[in-house]
Image 1 (cartoon, one colour):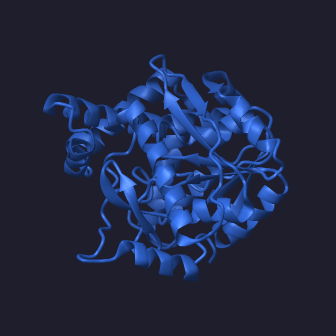
Image 2 (image 1 turned 90 degrees about the vertical axis):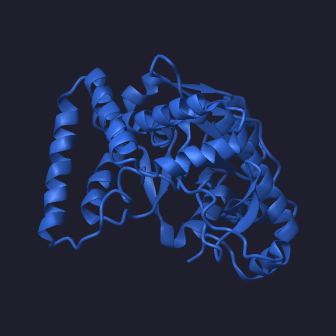
Length: 339
């Protein structure tokens, strides 16, 4: 695998941007938040990994069982999506999800402080040959990924293998949190692409036969997404990946990271998917559906490692709405990712 990877998803917003309100930099509360986070980073930095994981379990327990952060949404989504699970199995899966979210957030901080060399020791890569096959075409590679496992480690794991890594980041709403997280993301071999011109920059990277990573498993507002099936229900999804693949004719390679029972990670690179033949609405929709199907397969492989608390199906088609016609109109008017 070679080239540059760009991941527009860094930042676990269930424990950062959604957990704290936004205040201006000069606000006293904002300064207090920054001070608390700085102390937490110092504390994490001097802790052994086992204690960091213990702290993560506590964080996850608080969010899932004390604050009950979207807990009912998570249970409902899991019941609807994987109905074969019993009520007890759903409860265990959701409890495990919250614990893992806390552990992964704390581990992200710990590994960021320790450096990407430590990440290389704990991430196994499977299917590297699929990425090499994509690069041999000379059109770059678009990595399809999702909020599965400790997804924050994917960019660091790639850089740890000696590859240059470009990361697309969206500023976290809370300025203090954003400043701290930006410091955590800064490592040798990692650079950043502005979200303002990310689409153009990604196309340039693909033309250089580099790689770009995208996450499309988050709910979109009706004006920015198209509706495709996800776990048997319409989910408003960004068509940006399909547009980019169609325009660049770069192959799409699904990549997901899973936590293994021993606390290490498996980065699975799947066989490439051909880009859409054109940017027509039906082609873009068919490709976006295929990408969602691949994410669904990945989630079913380890349902406790996906973010069920995220309101993935929050945006719903209008009653009586001709979704297909709306998507055709949207496809003609908008190029997702360009601002």
